[in-house]
Each structure stands twice: as structure tokens, then as C-alpha cells.
Image 1: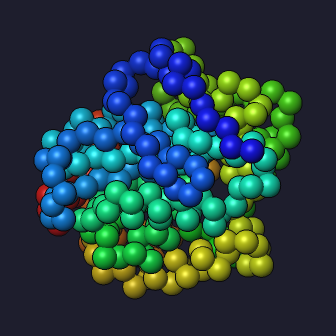
Image 2: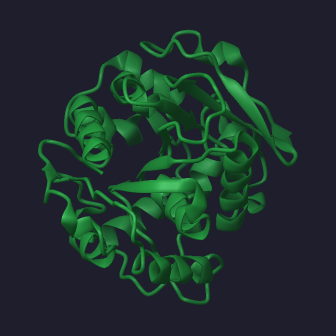
Length: 299
């Protein structure tokens, strides 16, 4: 069954006065917000595609959007099951392939080109494969606190504990998950904004299933796509700028291997974002946006 979230849930979200738009991606609607750009359909326009991870939504990028918009068009979707996007109530309806196909359809329907991909967490797990499989649409990569899990990687005990908790907790508090993944304190209003898309259990299937969709064996669904992505990233010739939060206990160990795997990444400054944890957009959004604009300008 498909569930649609009420817009009333977002009435009190602070500092995010963007009108939601929607794209049909099969039987579901994917929501997005955008700002900046010329408003035309020119293929040469700089476009920032900003992809969030689990269990957040486009609100995560609010402190970055105005700075990026000074340089080009900024498009920020909500992954299926997140934010204002439609969702399946049945957990079994979710798969890595389903999320990937929905994102690919979204990019094609909007005909996004000359894209700088800004991606974090699951935004990278889905966005990096799309970029390397559709390179004609993508100009640059900015992977942040993410990786390309093909089933051969080791997952930490902490990750396994997190995955088990998300899947089975009786009362999953999305706001607390996000707050705990940040270096700095979040206001109560911001924490509630992350709770807004999840009024009750019917709406939480995507949040519950994301960790379990990570391939932990080469035989898992999605592992082949990730392995192909690893191979193609190793041949990537366009600019790439790897930006990780120094205080992220989940992905910080993935930073150097990813930076040295993408051939062009070491051509860019060797930068850590200090005082930033997993949700580095919350911890240092303005700094990150400025660094990304500088990256675009020099490439």
C-alpha cells in the first residue's frame, strides 16, 4: 500500500520556506525543493543535486542551499519513504534497486545535466552509482560521509547494533537519531522537523529498512551494482572532491580509501570538516557550501 504524507505535518518546520514540487517515479511521487538558477532549460547551467541519507530529508540541506544557489540551480529531493515523498507501508517493497530506479527516473524526468552531485550517507550509496552509470549528466562529485558498499567491506559492531536497533525498536525516534548523529546541539524545533515526516509506524518503513539494504555479502541484492560502481569510480576522469566530517564514527574510516580510489579526488585539497559528525550538513553547512562553490569555480 502507498502512503502519502500530509503537508500539514510540515507547517512548523523552521527556516525552510521552499515550495515542494513533485515528480512521478512510477506509482509514487518523489518530492523535491529547488532554488537558484536561471529558471530556463539550458543544459549548460550549473546544477547542484543534493542527496540526503537515512533517516533525514531535504531539510538537511537548508543551511547550504542559499550559498549554492548563488552559483547555480539547486535541486534537493526527498528519497522515497522520506520527507514529503510517497512511501510504501510494506517494508518488503523496499530494495536498493527500487531506490536507485526512483532516483534515476527523477533525474531523467527533470532532465538534469551538468550536475555537481553533493551526496551524503545513502545519498552517496544511490547517487554515486547513478553518476558513474549516467556520466553524461554529471560534471563533478562531492561525496560526504558515504561509501560504496559492495558486500566485501567490513561493517563495524557499532553499525550492526545500529541496524538492529532501527529495524526492531518498539518506538523509533527519528529526531533523536539525527540529534545523536550531530556534533553540535540541535534546537527542539529542528529535532521536531526531522520527526515531521514520520507521524506513526505506517510512515516509517523506509527508515526501518535502509540499514538492512546495505550489501554485507557479495551475494546480496545490490552488491553487483555497487561492485560495478567501485570499478567505474576507479576510472572516473571528471573532478571529485571528498569531504568528510572528522567526528563521524560511522564513515570516517571510509574517507581515505574513497579519496584514493577516485583518480581525480587527490587533485583537490585534502580537507576534513572539523567539529562535524555524521550529519555534517547540520554541523557545518555554510562552510561546506562555500568549499563546494570554490571547488566548482576552480574546476
